[in-house]
Length: 349
Image (tube, rainbow, N blue to C red; front, top):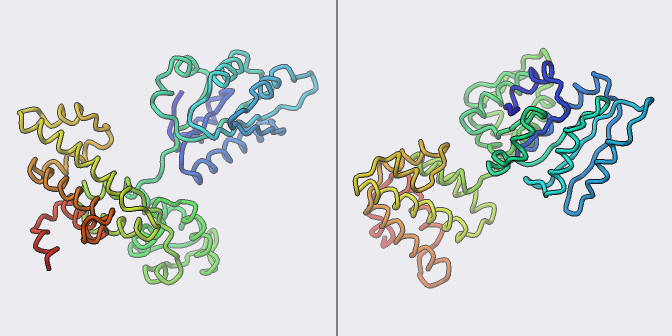
C-alpha cells in the first residue's frame, strides 16, 4: 500500500500493518513522519525499541534473529531499520520478505531511507509485498507550496506573517526545511511568541532577523529558466556561484537541457505532435508542463545558437577565450528564459 506523507495520520489509525516504510530525501519531513509512527506504536503498547543502521556490509541475520527471539514474556517491540541507500541488496530483500511472511504479532518494523525510485517500485519482489506494508512517499515542499507551509508553521508557533514576510522567508530558506524550522524557532523566541500568541511578522522583520539559508541547486536553475522566470533563474545562478559550484558543472546541465530541447524541436519541425516528441525524448511526465513552456518560445535556430554559446562558455572556463564564464552563463540563462537580444553586441560593449 502506497500513501503520501499527508495521509500518514489517518492510515495509522485504521491500518495496523506490520511494517511502515518511510521514503524521502527531505530530512525534516522524514524525521517528523518517523516520530509520528514511533508515537503511534508506543501508545499501542510497543514500548521497547531497537535500531539497526543498514550500511554496506550490514548482517541481515542480526535483524532476522528477532524472528526467533520472541518469548511468552517478551515486550512488544518496534524495530527500526535506517537505510543509507535507496536500494536493498538481495539479502536485504530476502530478509524483509521473510519477516513479512511471518510478521510476529509482538513486533512492528519501521524502515526509513532515501526516496525509492521507480525501478524498485516496479520490481516483482516489492509488488508482492504491497498488501503487507505501508509505503509512505515523502516529497519535498516545492516553492509553490512553501509559503502555505511556512504560514502554517509560523501560526503554530504563535506568529502571524504578512505576505511580504512569507515571500522573503521563502526566498531565504527555499530548499532547506531544516533551516526554515530553525528560523521559525528563532523568530518565535525573539517575538516572545508561543501557542495561542498573536505576534506579527513583516517582511522587514524577516530581512533583519533571518539569515539567507536557501539551498540553490541545478534543478531549480533549469526549471526557472524553462518556465521563463528570468529573475529567479538569475538569483539561483548567483546562489550557485556564491556556493562555489564549478561553472562547467552548471554548463553541463544547461547543455544537456538544450540538447534535449533541440531534439524535440527538430521532431516538431518534422510534423510530430509536441506530446509525442517529448515522450520520444524521454521527458519525465512531471516536467512536461515546464518543457512545453520553453518549447513555445524557442525555435530550432535559437536552440542551436544557444548550444554554440555553450561552446564559447566552455572555452572561457578553460582559458581559451577572454570572456567571463559567469557573465556568459548569465546571458545563456537569460536566453533560455526567453530574453532574446543581440548578446554579441552586448559582449563587445
